Image (tube, rainbow, N blue to C red):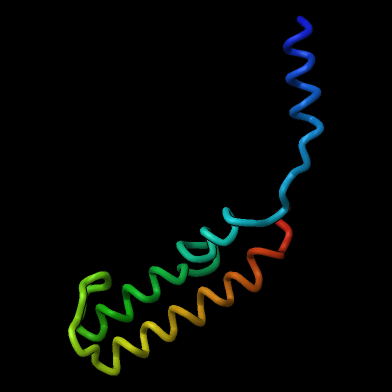
Amino acid sequence: MNLKSLAALTLAASVPLASAGPLAYGLCQTASPRRPGCNALVVSCYAGAGFTFGVTVVGAPAAIIACNAGLGTCMAACAATALIAPIP
């Protein structure tokens, strides 16, 4: 093994590992093995109300406001758990 490879290996081994963070947060929002993520839930909520998520609706009906409130609650729960919980 040459000196450059040894130096790169030493540097890589000394970098601290992240136990949680943006990846865990993204997985919580999008999907997890146990449940669909926040985004899947809000898309199904919009579809159940007869709307398409991501399309602007003038004068949002109560069903859309409820879907958005649920999305906010879900994402807040992701932030509270996924950003601090360790990943094995």
